[in-house]
Length: 310
Image 1: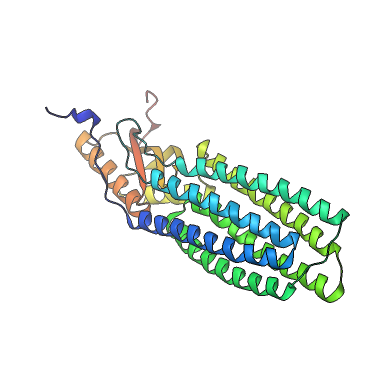
Image 2 (image 1 turned 90 degrees about the horizontal axis):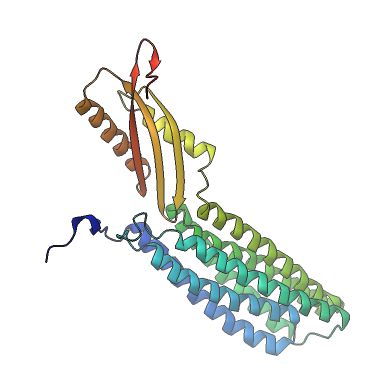
């Protein structure tokens, strides 16, 4: 039986960006699991609600990173007959799941921190907690630096969302250290609950940033002005292109989609116009390797301007 050619789409090999994204998700899951183990030990040693808050945050980091792992794998699946624009929006959906998880944890910590403010309790083995937090900060900074490297290469929405709350973790862990020092040195019992509440507010802020980024992708938001101007400049470099208008852009995961009308001399042949359009697409692909471009050709009468019948 011969396959229907209309349902067959060219399959791309996994790109270097796809490989980087997968490695970043594996690294995030591994680090989150390790942080949960050492923070659980520190919580039972210190009885600190701030320590509990950062342990809960790491548990949610693990859940979010596991979701990210599967979302990134799905987003990298090539386009097929049912998803001709690919599966890139899986990244944005993962971002929304992450924001829901993070918001839930923040609400939990607000209640825990409020209860500890009303009923302050002493912290034990604070030196153990400080050591664990220093180790946690070192591990998290290492992960964030690697994620930033991957984000610069791939512009991944899912990994950007994942990195946001790990950046928050660095601040959170630093806050826990300060809370432990205030309790141990100055015997200020309210520090533990207060920092738990501050950590919850940081989580809510991180969740809001993830929601904004995810909705921009899901709602097909245009690229920024700087990037749109770069696309126009790239197109206008091609000899034979006299102008560009009606530029539309959107991003879906790793895929960038752009549509545009280009003005050309109306007296040239169809073959020459097609050749120029192909050259424009080649320039755009060189500048944006993960992009797909649709170029419409508009004839322009040099004496009178754009063809009124177009």
